[in-house]
Image (cartoon, rainbow, N blue to C red; front, top):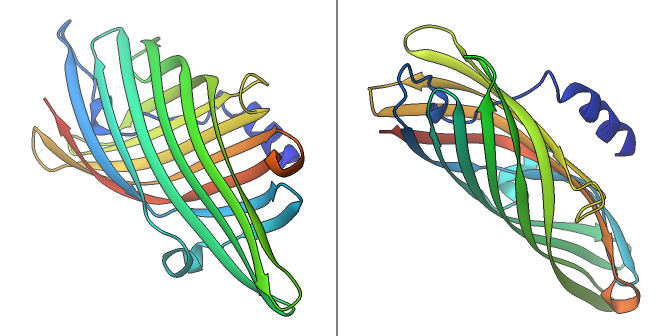
Length: 247
């Protein structure tokens, strides 16, 4: 996970995205607004430690629907020729059950993330971003079996500052490609966090577009001690689909 984070840190300056039709370029000084509800089918990979319990978490994409709940993402942004203000709300409810010797291990993670970022458009394609992501997390590990029947749950809230860049590349009058990447945490909340996603959009009308993409969010967070200890090193990723309304 550490090596992967370093690779993303190096690549984030060239891998980036505007994740909705709001990314469409405005040719006047007027503000353009967009609302884009999404569904995110998210799997997870990494490790989770809660109190004295620790478990590797690995749910491949092929078993997302069977093992995990769907997540919801809602995006809103406003932009003109030079400035962008965007917000993102994500709720993720993930759970993994694994059979072990004489029992079952259940790892659960509830995440609510609210992100606000402002940006400056350095060109018609690229925008640089700075903002913050508020995280409300509940994590739990439970062992049920004949040898042990115990578990622990913890909750945390924190704020991660973030910086990033996004790009919007028109492919035709109807199609576009979007890329975004950001890094954050820096020990303020998470030790380190990164996010990257890419999508392709189809403009069905002047007001409505269909968006298909793939999103990855990685967090490395540690806090507390004893029964209140939590350590998350998780990559949450999966495909997403949404409809963007621009006005």
